[in-house]
Image 1: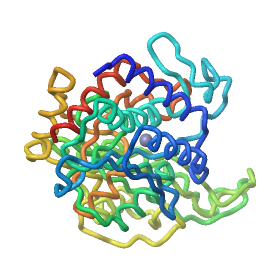
Image 2: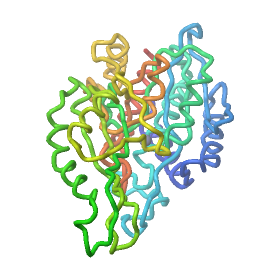
Image 3: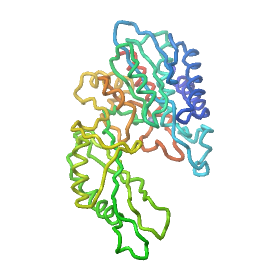
Image 4: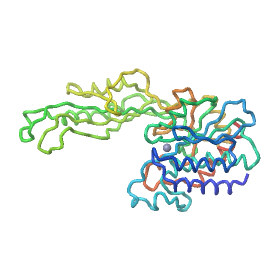
Length: 381
Ligand SMILES: [Zn+2]
């Protein structure tokens, strides 16, 4: 295997991907570029679907085995103010030993590595052990419509999904579930010159927030996926007039957890809010909160699972070192696959903390190492 040429070709493809912006809902040009590359590289089947997802299949040596799926999304977040970037966000310039650009690590560098791992086998005249399906999905950054469509229409057996979210070439075994809630405190609005006549709900909100961090820190942690966290993000009031006290004030609470349910978090909020009149609703469209005792789920594949053992062994032989077993801090499309009983692990180049930042970049050496790990995985798994 000529690893240097493979890496150079893979990085050149990643640059073309970055130079084709693909905000959520605007992935068609990128999907066409990926499809064209999959065909040129000798994938046996290339197709798309109604959601706008793009797929490429390499036939395995044993086509009776369930497929290995390599999944990345096609979209990226807004680059924001270009003046905050060291180089223009869609220029895809190489600075030192890193590729810089919007999507470099989340997700176009990892996407290129997944596509080129299959290409490497074709160039070497080899077949993967089982069918390999590259699966590029739309709209991950806005709720995962592409991943949901793929999982619901899946019509072939799947052994394992390898998620291309940046994991620094560790094997990421899961992440916490996400729950976003609006908590509204209700008061009585009056002229701001006579606040004693009303009830200003901002005080109840302040009292609540002062207790929130410590209360959440005291919740039990998951052994692999870590502790529950909360971030109060958006705050809104009903009034736009500076001389009127609000009738209500509302905060968006972003919880990440692997040990709590909707009901247990609601109980916690009610306890902290005390006597202050308040109500809770789901973030999307302010739908009323439906109670559930089910633990909030991201995805989780336990470290002692035979799938993890086999994948880690193959990747380890490719990289020349065993991959560390870790977790993601952020949420991924893996949460849409897990409810269908599809096992998921994350394995991709790039540092997780680079995702969604101005100046996003990926180390080229990690892309090269990831190619070696993925090629071994395709051959052996
Ligand atoms: Zn991503």
